[in-house]
Length: 471
Image (cartoon, rainbow, N blue to C red; front, top):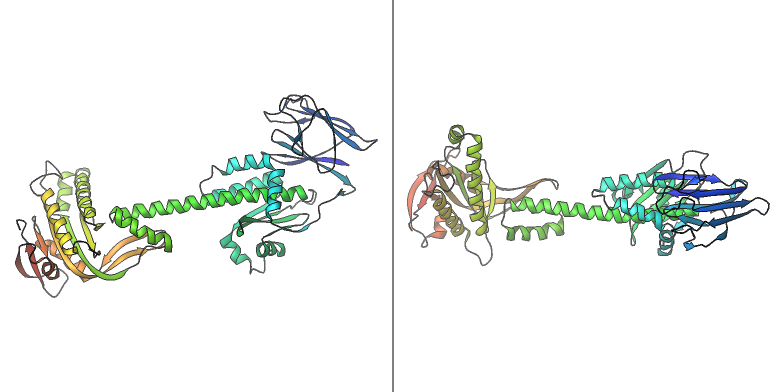
């Protein structure tokens, strides 16, 4: 008994049993086997089965794009043998000869090492189908979609009922599971393809590294058993799956890096963001909270609630956005980090080798910010905006808090709280600083002592000083 197993990119495999006589193939609907492919001629080829001699002959009918047997184009008549592979366009026909229930030279189930030679042979045997598979997978951008697409392709192209694709992280747990199929465990441990008549487990490899496993099974007893060609096709698909998985994982990594970079650029200058990203890409995490000396600067818009009510939300939103933009640009120019606080901003300056002292940076930024807002009306030509600047220096907890998916820059401690409360004394258009800050800038700026001030929520008073803007 001679049979053809027909493979096409868009349909499940079908089996055609040869009857004595002639079987016509071509694009025309009148053919016994219709080949829906632009490369096929209307009357493309014939297959003649002589039951007396038990021979099968393929005849090319002078087709335009040719008929191929085992990758070689034939001319005229060609006597076929068991296990021959015929190709017309993307239409593949695998010829098998069966004796009783078994195919001649039946493929023996067992273990098959995933070698370079097996991979190259598999890709060569299935180059046409792999071209179509690669075309589909190359448009996939996310890992979950890639796994789903690979699963669907295997079910359709190989005609299996059950298929599952697992990544390396899942395989670590599967290795020790008592419920996993023994051959799946063997495939994971040995990076080998394991096959039975109705089940197959094929590793997804990247060089010598196992990055996944394809598990497939035929649930219907009437379906034909897996053979050598099925193994080669599964190996070829696993190779395309590996490329798709690696590509989508790389895209995901790039997306995470871009997201992290956008997050950092909200708070730090581009130069500081680049420095932090080097550490992040190496360790996979942004620096957590740690205690260090900082100078913090607060500035907010006075009577923001009243302004929003008087001007309207949209108008006040435009003013606030301008304030954020102007302040951020100045802060970044002096290597500071930014945190937005509703109607104001918090700037953080950390010590840098060879750079300007943090206290002096904060004062420079404060003076420039007041210079932009005060009298110039640059934030809004119709509304006078009043702000103040409060600066304090000391120890604080600085870093990123949250999860790998969502992290937020923060600075915590009494140093920050004092600066925040000193804003009450900074309006209109003043720079009020704490004692540690004034000690660092003494001799560089003129200032006057405000005296011990009481701060909301704090029992002890704080010595405050005003930096004179004409100094």
